[in-house]
Image (cartoon, rainbow, N blue to C red; front, side, top):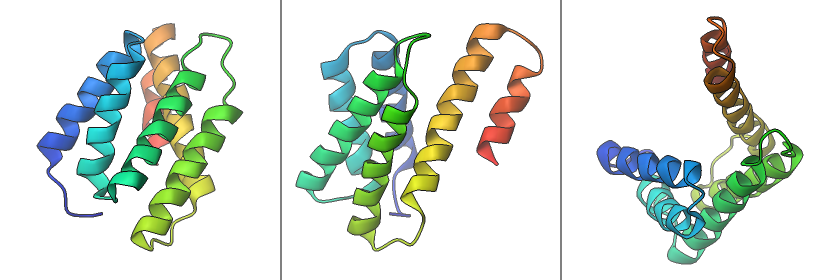
Length: 127
């Protein structure tokens, strides 16, 4: 899991965010498949399942303001459990999912409110 091409993963993540904002879900899924495979090197069946979970989490997060943060947290918990099982990792999937969705929340808030202290929330979400 710790050996990956950061340029490839970064380009795929950029593509995923582009397709997320355009709500092009099929293209998002393709970017997610590439990103999960490039970043984590899971088997193809696990890569496909992981990318599907990431897609569904992002779809649940997308509606503004009427999203349900619990749904993407649950889906990302499943993703991180899949990753733990694939890599024999020891991190807590529930905590990882919580941190991931908190980052999404802080990012959305910083994008939309324009207050100078919004950037601080992004920094806090990373710690």
